[in-house]
Image (cartoon, rainbow, N blue to C red; front, side, top):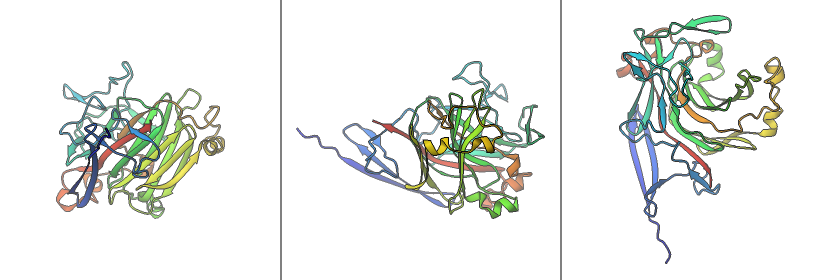
Length: 337
């Protein structure tokens, strides 16, 4: 007997920070599971299957810690940076002057919200970090970071988000097996006139890094593009299709840029990085990865120097709380069936 599959389409509308959020969910009564397809492939011509172990709608009251590891969770009044999934390995604490705090997130209105705070009294690390010949200490600014517990290899990664409207990053990236795959690192605002003029607050910046002994973290590929809109003004959907042949990036369901494996391998990293990465090829993202969602400060792009500076673009009723938000509606990962 032919099965009947009833599709219920439920649309949720609400306003967050003055912006309308719309989520469409398809529920199959045959499986009693929510079905989602990439925004660029709504009829699923690509034969995608949602990987529920690394996808999250953030509709619960608490974060699913079976899926996510919170960096900088507090114990005995201090943040800790032990990597529970890789015992004995210390966690990255964030880029100075900011530092990750396990308290800097909340779930609200069906979204994960990562918080950057002006927090001078935070128990910061006394270690310094050196960038471009200058030492920076951790001070004043705390940020958020959560990391997926499960690894996956190849697929379609999609996030619907709105960047923080401040001089901090709002990032969606991944690491694994000595590689780093930055889907985007967005800067919602800038004070440096030259970067403001070049549209840094409209930029899609993605890259690949090799962190093996030979690579030493050097970029093996990168692209910078003007999206045509400020990344902190509204929610947008960003999709990344990744397989053994290269990378395609979609914005609001439309193909925005792509780079084949051949193109990436021809990238002139030897010239740009004074010796290259030492790898046989630049396309080093061929092994399982895990997702990172975080905020950081990049000193060479400017850092908020006061609470008022951090909150320069905050709504009038929120200018005094010392908090700015990176809002994430969902993270969905599909792989081929």
